[in-house]
Length: 333
Ligand SMILES: [Zn+2]
Image (tube, rainbow, N blue to C red; front, side, top):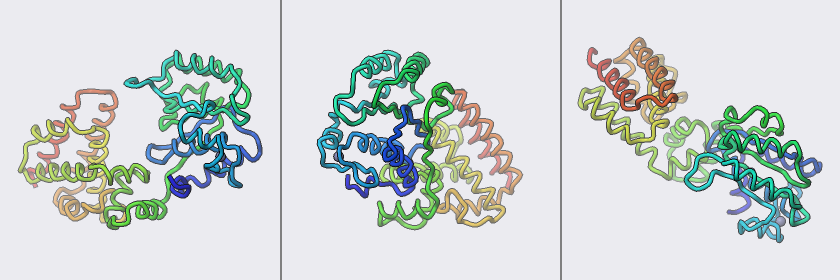
């Protein structure tokens, strides 16, 4: 990756903050990096790790990319760099992993620079692992920094959070988002770029993965199903069964974005503020036909179901209930 591609414009302030730690020689013993998925948190902390392992960093603390420390880091063989994550096929970081880490940290770093441990996702620490980790934080070793990364900070024990310096990575504004996305996908249309801003909830890397993957196509297909139900040309039970095979959090988000957009269309708030500007024509027609009362009713049902879906209730029933309701709302026009 070229140096410029490594710099994400919305992280500029974050980088200055990290660089200041380095230039002022007050590297935190534990740093917690928080921010939504798709903002490049891991890329940021790897850059910082690389900077701490570099023998000749540049003026802005960016790694030189050429010294022995940088070369070892790039080859993933730097002995003073560790990445703790759940083992293959597991969702949690086990206590044995943290015990192994602590044993290793009891030894001095092998080189003269820092030693860096990234724990990501930090919310995957099991309770036992978190406790072992906490003990280590009470007696940390020299020239060692631990960097915890999470998009779910509420899942971390407060005792750990309180012992870390915090760094928040936030989403760019719309102009920066669009400029960056167009820079990475020059052929993208204005409408698709604006649509991705809403669908990826302002997170550029997620938007790019949506564009390169088939997410947008899948969402269009689901919207066609949704329209077919409104036109009474499909059966809600059949569609619910098909949707069951798709990623649920995304579907729930799409459904709520369509309903919010329908309500906005009814009140004519303008295409610019929609999650789905590319669907505005269909949405406007539907909104006028249904009116706000029915839309709010369905939105309430969706919110209720979204809470239940977090509690892992029956997903098939949830989609059936939502789609039957949508089908019926469109019946008595
Ligand atoms: Zn270097």
